[in-house]
Length: 299
Image 1: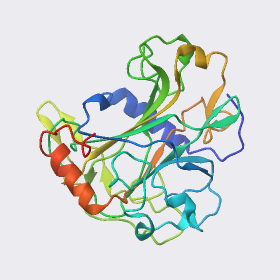
Image 2: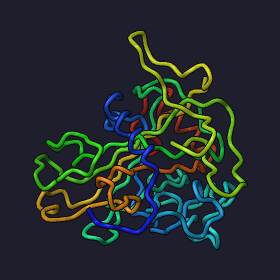
Image 3: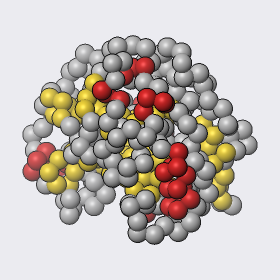
């Protein structure tokens, strides 16, 4: 593993990710109701407007996707909803002006931009057609529910550490990290004007106003304390040229990994909800609450 000098994410994040990967079925983004591709990335910067609001330097480098305005701000670490909503985007849906970011990948010690970023929006309980209402403005989420693969079509099973994709076979071999975000909300948000961690959900450090849905033999539901059903956001971030040979002999780690962390086990992702409100409502209505048509809205 490459040694890097950024502060390590809490081991609680890694422990939670391992536990959740073992107990929650893997996501199936190919069946997602709304698909939004965002590429290329909009840049890398060592700032974090959610977890380290007000700090000009965050704990580690991030790669940003979607909203084109965020990194052009004089103080991106203090980015607000009003500064980002309905701004130009690198996403295929022009109404998706949300900002997405995650730790950057290092290949042989060099920061390496992702080749693909895809956001999938589904019903609150991961169904093809189901229940969800639009996100509230300025919702801020940090998730540590993740898994790594060598792409959906490869022979490498999902795992919590970065896999060796040089041994994978399949129609497209791309190193991919998959993130899943909570979809049950209690109707409240934290203070987004304070300094430090302004997330409405994060593995540690805040009062959580969201949680993940529960699944039993009788069906799926949101816990009683979090009754409002929002879309379930899934993200895939991928690297590589589609061949296993690309990965031969390469050393891999994340910018958030510390010297003793198994590579990739500090994975986490941030979502700052700054969609155009009309576009968001249309997407939820047309792509989640009803069977989607083959339109640019649903992807």
